[in-house]
Length: 205
Image (cartoon, rainbow, N blue to C red):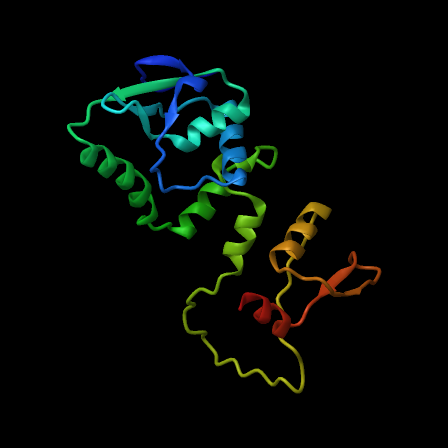
């Protein structure tokens, strides 16, 4: 186990007590990914435990991930709280403040673009499905130099998503929740799945 953070002692995971009033729920998908990141990159933040109550205040997800990863002991930092109200305030603030941040998606895309193809991108917390979903979000564009006037009875507008692997193709289908798609094949490309905009918009709703 690699530890890169400061801590007071290594504590058996079975001895740590999650706060029963912690409002944050940690789904299996999150815990599984966090366990993978901790096993690969090591501990960058200790689990915070209250000296007053003995409960975990910060790091419930890290504790669950450690158990999933098979760690018997985890780095713990003990902190003082003057009252239950102060302890709960820190618990709630730790959960809420992260929700209030905003992501510069252009910068995220730029940073991810710096990784080599053989790097496991999931160690950043992002997955291929996340990136595809963000790429499909509508963004405000500058006014075009020339006016674009679509004539829908002459041609149909479309968006093309290139899938380089079967996994990517399955993730796209799952993300769009598409049950039936019309597939085309020619000698230039692999089977091309086509779904109507109406169907996609209905799934969005």
